[in-house]
Image 1 (cartoon, rainbow, N blue to C red):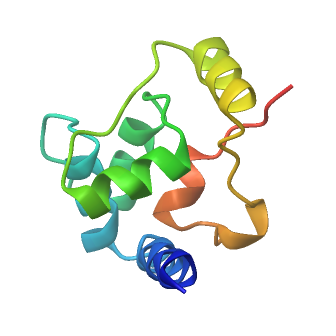
Image 2: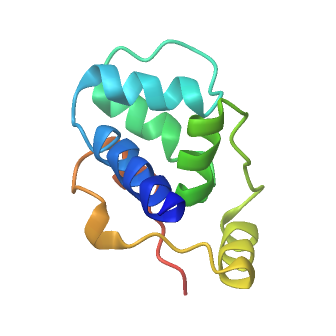
Length: 107
């Protein structure tokens, strides 16, 4: 039962970060530890695209109020995600929302 409640809370947070509002984009920039002020969704998206973060790790870090683990490049993120099976279903990411900026295609 506890595992089911944890997953439900996790998905609720994912829904929150799928909201396509400037406030949510700015919250994500802040949660990722990206310095600076970003006054538009486009600026936020460009800033978010510069970091390599596993979406599951991002959401778990936000829940725990911890720093978000980042990877140095695409290859490091891809290797980590595959080796640790830390996939996040694309269907759970709203197109155009802040979480979509973290999506990467893993070759």
